[in-house]
Length: 366
Image 1 (cartoon, helix red, strand yellow):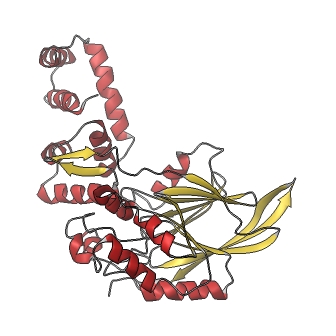
Image 2 (cartoon, rainbow, N blue to C red; image 1 turned 90 degrees about the horizontal axis):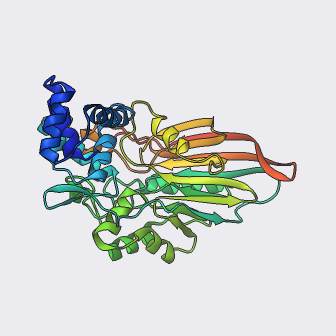
Image 3 (spheres, helix red, strand yellow; image 1 turned 45 degrees about the vertical axis):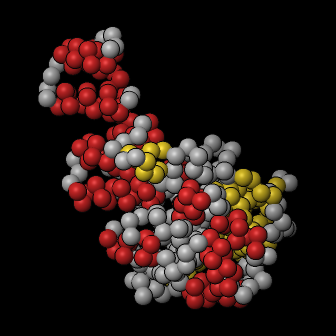
């Protein structure tokens, strides 16, 4: 249902008008000939869609914008928001949704924005039976004034000592170009794609470990405004940094699969909500043995959800002013994931695993 039609019906319905009266006015306004029963069912289907999203107003607003461009004032009326509430909603939409942007006073869905490409990569990062380790992290936000470079270096040193096979980063590799949320220009220490690439090269960990990374919504912001995939560009300059895709990718080695994903939107009513939604959106044959999810700067471990080991490994960006406004506290560090592999009926299987969350000790900014 078109947004203005839904708002029209919702307003009349809230005035306790009968469906007969609502339908008469609706048909007259929109030059249609629907019956009261058909209009009622159409309205209830729309209500059911929105109710299924719970209290996640960001997700609801995103669905509306994807249908039709929305004025911020219309969203404020729809969700009964004051100016502060509307400001928070706009921050969340523009920060968390790579495909949402402003155009001539409207919030619009940018169909040219990067989408999760989810390319499958066949890699030789381990082989054979026995124990193998991976270092997992997300959201280093290179070029942010809140980046935690020293702690990231320390994490790499620990992973080298633990003899991990490879490092995996779940997106938001950079802080973007300063337009992700209001005031983000003040949170950047390096401006411009070329200078950012040079800077990242200069601070990249001195390591022999290979790192496999995707992009995130901050990286996509630079792609939207300048057409530059900065993560791919950086990866082409650093020998042991390997680009997997814009927002998601699947890695497979010796029959064991790893899904790497950068999320979107707010975290939801409980910590595992969005991770579960991501896995639930996959067909059974798409669900990987391991799912590594970034974006929310927090830790999560589900030992088996739809046959997948699900991990949100935290971040390497300290608490920014934006996060303080949102009452969010980052969990800074990474994860060492240890797997025991055995060949069963000719296929490699994970028979045991251990998850070690490394808290790197910074919880409240500088």
